[in-house]
Length: 281
Image (cartoon, rainbow, N blue to C red):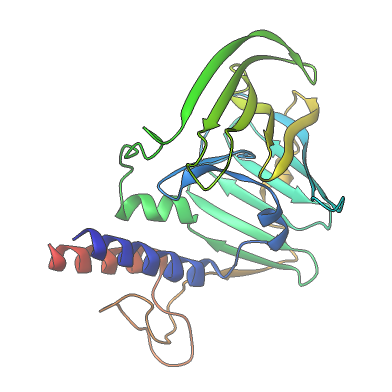
């Protein structure tokens, strides 16, 4: 059953990726994901994540920086900046420097991705929400236990980029010989979180395997953003991803709406997967 679960999860990812019509941006992959295995992963630059926070509006600049210096002195350095917005209703907008933007409306659980080059807006169900309907969150199996030692120290609250934040420093030791290393590897992460905004304000990570990575919110303004930022512009063409139309369904035993188009709606895909999983029990 576990093997089927893994296969179903992989197929679900592929199905919803087709529905949402978007692959992960290559530049996102330049920033580090922390964790010893796929089943126990912590993302350093989490941004808005999946949380919905109402009554705490703000705008800010989201900055990411990574630096890795190779043994021969080669520097691999990457920067990324996005504008982020959250209104009192909990709606969020992440705007890239090229003008592309992603809007998430917590009231409808609908994400819209705006492409200014084609004046197109793609609407769909966010991947994480869709997966949650199929595979409810389970406690981590604790893959780090007995493999690494980890120490967490609470830091004194302080102003970070103009916002009062509480800090935590985590030091993880990968023992000698654990991954073929001839000495202990020390990985240090600091996270500064605003309990008022309910946002990660800054995080830093130093890992001799990957280099140094920083994520932070700067130029934070605690004000209500323009409501139009959370609307699809009237001159954009709206594409409802996963609308009925056809093509082979990405779900085993799933629906197909007819020739020449996409398979069923996101909800239909999820229903089909639920039915398949029930059959396998």
